[in-house]
Image 1 (cartoon, one colour):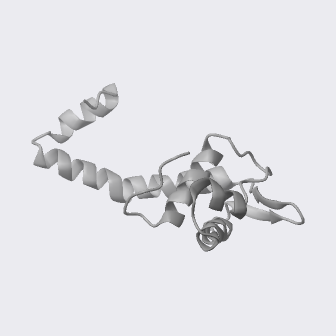
Image 2 (cartoon, one colour):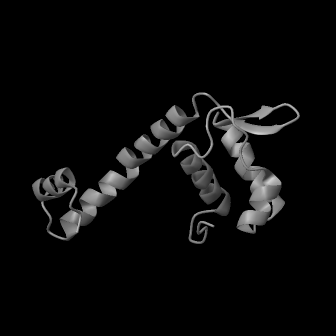
Length: 121
């Protein structure tokens, strides 16, 4: 079981876990995903948290209801997730990385070289 502790709301962590499972193809297009009952049991969260997780994924177009069966992965889920995460990386994580590198006297050129080589200490 993956760790879900930390500062971020639990339902957002669960969304991230399910999105990761879609990206690594644990869940493929049109396949049924983990149910709210399974989420509650597997991650030891209440049913409201599990339902909120599924609700947000549905609202974001990542899953849809397969009538009488459960929630399934949409055909464009991967592109939605990748687009969202790339935007977050560019808007939040990259600026934080550059700022922290500056605090540590790592030049942008040195940082770029490390990234290109894939050698981040």
